[in-house]
Length: 334
Image (cartoon, rainbow, N blue to C red):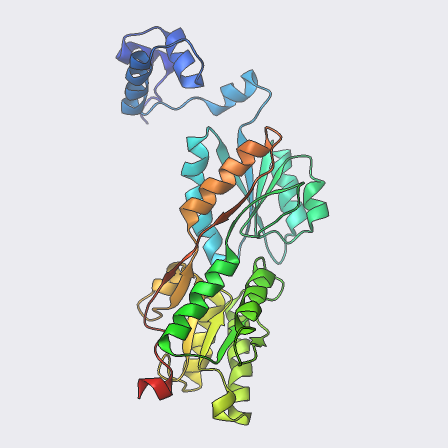
């Protein structure tokens, strides 16, 4: 195994003293711009990284951000991947703790605090604002918009995201547009409210189908819609559906396919997240894109601000990725 580069190695490569390298690495004043650039270039060439354990011993701060994520959240992995470089840019390290069916959010939080996390990034928090605000470390709610002054947040502008989906479908000629909600999942209420407000401006009443964040939730929602289609008058049934997220949309598409309903010829479907699932060759799902890099950057910046006593709330603009799951409704297509 190759020897790990040391402070002395960087000093020798840059032609400066170890003390000067230490000043540059710590970001402290005392080095000229030219010297700073030379030291950083030497450190990068050697692959030098400061010893986190030594830094912790010298400081009362851990510079460690704890991230709570959901084991069933495919989009969470994309956020986590983006969090590492975002944290490193501001001098933080990341540690993870999962919640799931057999591990509650409070247990995930406790383990991060025990590890010395000085701020918490909770992806799609399940806990109430009061519980989050009572934690001994600042909390950033990620993916769930918040206005609570005790918390910080970094989330996608959900109203703008739903508007992108609905306006895309309207531009194709759809007027009867349904929404599969996310149950109690983070972001579900905001997306549902945005959908209902958009549909309130039309003569067509909104149709919200009970759903959830998982693939099985999407399958159940599709079966509920298919039952409505078998009972109702075709002129009153939706020709397009906006599903809470891509994972649920995948289940929704699977159930439609099993029932012989052809997408998009008979029913257009839009997902949300634009996760890797949406781009799969056999899926090709039109989806509202949440920007993992922008969300991660906003979350880490919010944590840094919170550690200085400032609470911030950032909404990241979404975009729409159009694929082959949407098309004009049957009457328009003909």
